[in-house]
Amino acid sequence: MDIMIIDDSKIDLFVSQKIIEKVNSDCNIEIFASGSSAINFLKKSGGKTCQKIFVPDVIFLDINMPEMDGFQFLKEFSKLSNVDKKDIKIHVLSSSTNSQDIKKTQENKYCAGFINKPLTATSLNKVIVRYRPYLKMFDYQADDVNLKRKVKLVE
Image (cartoon, rainbow, N blue to C red; front, top):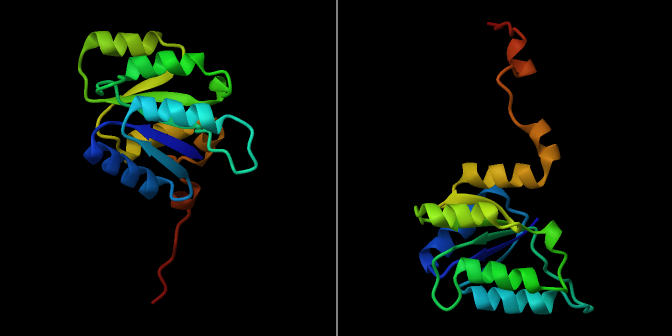
């Protein structure tokens, strides 16, 4: 799984990266401190080249950033023609409690959800399962078959 994190806070970038690495150690992570640098990267990475192309499966996007905020990023993202946008799930990852921000996120066709900062293992797992629905069958269940078996203690 390829994940892109866009946030102007170095602390939030670090925390999100460590959570992702802990939950899913085999994913590729690209980190950007601004929306404009991420858009420029996507413009370049969607083109044809001989190198392995990084196109994220999931983007975690902060809303409140200088230069280009999350909603401006979404506007520029919608203009990209070299990336298959339907395969990229964008989740706004923000500390904003503004109801207008949440409403704008819900109304944006490229946004798959709104997550309150900080990213946690639980919220990340929900994103992964939503992105890969077949993973639900591997969730732990309350009635685990192994718990029903009686074990005799041999002394």
